[in-house]
Length: 325
Ligand SMILES: C[S@@+](CC[C@H](N)C(=O)[O-])C[C@H]1O[C@@H](n2cnc3c(N)ncnc32)[C@H](O)[C@@H]1O
Image (cartoon, rainbow, N blue to C red):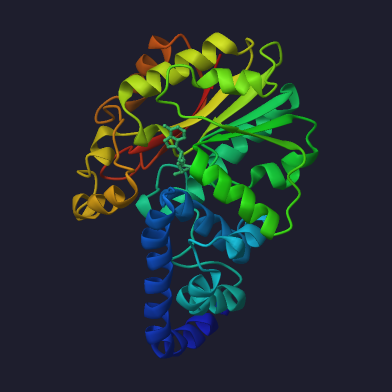
């Protein structure tokens, strides 16, 4: 009944809103692509905070820090997001559930449209299960992730955020502008493509004698295979046994753009901020075996895994995995 009422309100509202929705989408896209490019920072990190902001607003996942940080960023627009999403928001309030976007799909049924929503939840689960045994939390390629400023703030773990200098400086400035306390976080400027990237973390106070969660979310796909393997080796060499690396790894068909129709045509957009897709593993066929082979070849063991899309016709296209040191 509520769904029908919600549709009755949604349809005319969305029709009236079409011009505003278009303006909202253009404005958010302009900020994400053009302003990110001008600032020399990751546009894909914006994709994620926009998704997290939306999940928070629609009541799918609490992220008060993202709700405060997003409006303070120069390369997104929460006003534009409101213009784009308001009719869907009204639908969700009346129906008491979400439809079309943002949606958390069932495990194995995810499509590309569920990338941020589902992926975020899978990483949350791995972190929740590992956090009681960990004393340090290292966000590798932290981007605009806000986990450090929500409930993990009081977890007792020492928190490090690693990223390239330009985006980290933008984040720190925007966190300050948003009035978010960062005193408990140690920021470290790094580049995983450089051989000695870990030394900056050690110099910042990382203790190799403490069990650690390394969060590597949304990063491997932008690196070359050598860089991914070297990073895993370096973490393993510097982490106490029992530590975990939570990482997402993509199917080769996803990074080449062959996974979905039209995807190849959209990939050049990533060139604007120099974020070409690169590393993926072969997931057609026995995707579990493919992942296991990759992980064990680096001397790591598999813990929790969440293969996205494995129940769909096109098969698994990415996995969020817990890699045990
Ligand atoms: C898609 S964003 C993910 C951000 C964050 N992990 C999240 O989930 O919200 C990718 C991040 O990886 C960082 N990154 C990409 N290549 C890197 C490299 N070689 N060294 C350090 N950071 C890198 C980018 O600066 C960007 O912040």
